[in-house]
Amino acid sequence: MKNRLRVLRAELDWSQADLAEHLGVSRQTVNAIETGKYDPSLPLAFSIARTFNRHIEEIFEAEGKAAAGGLAASGAGL
Image (spheres, rainbow, N blue to C red):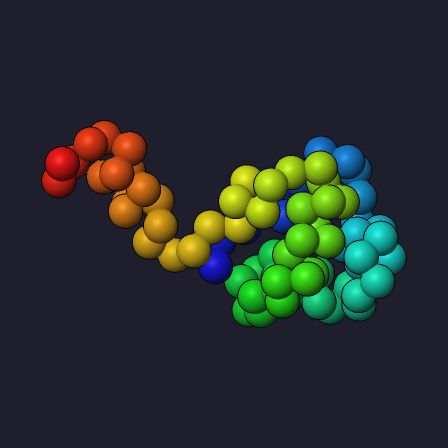
């Protein structure tokens, strides 16, 4: 799963440890999510979204979703 976690964290000038503390998880968990080695649970994804005051969809994107969304947005197949 692709995500914008690193970018959003950098905008606040937070380290991985800072974000981990806000979320109540380990720094290793934040690193694993950022690098795509781990997909967060739904409750953790909601917590991340609340932390950055964003919708989940603004932070996380399933692999291949952009291509499918692009077709729907362009009206292809209608």
